[in-house]
Amino acid sequence: MSGIVSYLKGAASEDQVAMLYQKRGATVIAQRWLGQGGEIDLIFEHAGQIIFVEVKSSVTIARALESLGPRQINRLLASASDFLSRQPAGALTETRFDVAAVDGAGRIEIVENALMA
Image 1 (spheres, rainbow, N blue to C red):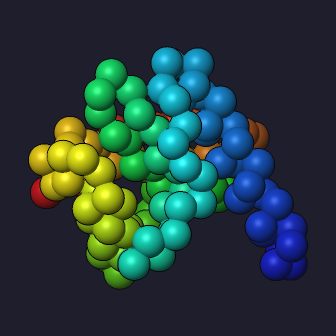
Image 2: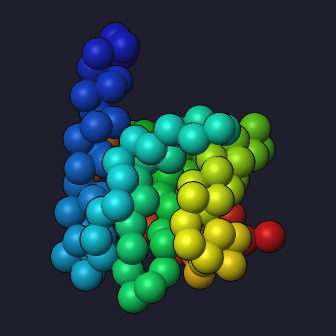
């Protein structure tokens, strides 16, 4: 798959996921936010909680979920920490980190608190 096609597929998946969270009452704070560790696909606020979302897409949900490795998780956590350092409550801000997997048919599965230690 060419670079532009991959980019467009990823952007479309992020848009689908953003719409799903918004239907659930969340407000988009940022899309493709770039922090010290790298990019966080989506950041929402819902009921006083900040929700960081990594969107992964592949042929199947399982393959999408498997594509998130330890190095990427560390980068995402570093960027989330960077984002929280700019919030009034800092690291005390209520947060969660979800992974949204999108398959080739456009089905979405959200794993809430996916990066919980």
